[in-house]
Image (cartoon, one colour):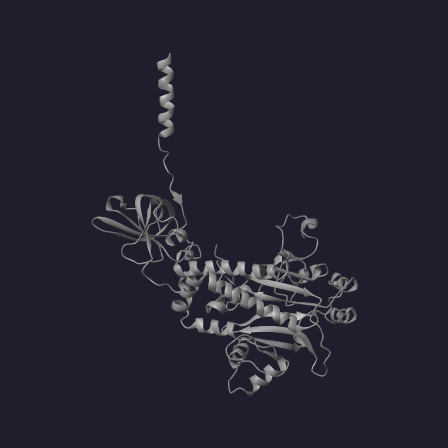
Length: 475
């Protein structure tokens, strides 16, 4: 009995002393490539960017989208597999070491390579050793994220989104989720997508919301509602325009950053927020996505970095609409559109004004009253008669931001709504002026145009994951 008990104790001791197998540490490619857990056994997962088998060794480059840089995998040729091709998904375990060939670089010495998902490179339309144009890539919205340029764009877009939210949070703004479905036409242009439920044949069900409803063109009016209770509010979300256009500047679905500020009586308050937000977001992106931004500035839009640096170094000048018209009229440039006082500024005019002011962003203020929507504040400066409105024009794009002080005077706003036949529809908007209204103003920034501006990308369809425009809705 004693011997049996002794054997049982020894058995427990032996089990206790046995080494527990160490699980490999799972890392993202960006972490592994930066040298995290150097010398440890690690596991990475990603997609093969290149495969180079040799007599004794196998070399792979694997990327998981966490950075532009791929991780080099070195393995015995015995681990080679016919399924290891460009685009195949793999899981690799091994020891992370410093590269003996490249200073300040690491590689993974693999002891296991497992193919998770195979890819047929013969049929794959994107070739690893070819540089495809953005226009070509637009044909493959389901595959273009696998290219270096577009994966860089998406990381930049993600970081720019974070930067915008950070700016507003740090400056005391409250985020508001404004509705995507609305009964308002904020811009008054009538370019709306109407939302309708499938017909059931029952007349009572014909109008799902009991009133006509549309996809939003702007969250501004809903922000104005909230600005009656919060002094600083913003929203960041999708907006829609049913504009039959296939230009490089327009999309049917795009993202807007919009803000509304209460207790303000000057356009300078708005321009300060616009400029500070632009600088803060751009500096954040340049600091946190340096490698991805460099890819664009070196290979897609060479020389554009100098333009971006210049924008950040200088204060944005401010000119009035009247001064802008004088500049255009004095120009020797031949414009396709007229430049008389009262005309709407076209893209060609906006780009010329930017160049005239030193190829940096420029604010244009005090537009003709008749050019602006009903909510823009009347400057009451007859005979010119302008509105307290402002646009921010930027290099390569033209208009990036549009904003105004809002008409808070009940009598003037009511008269304006009566003039355009909207008094009944916007009776709630008049209530905002009747119940504790304060001077306020706001603006909207086109997020895709912002990305075009800092990266130098010519076509707006190339800075959004899935572009929607007239006659095109792939996926």
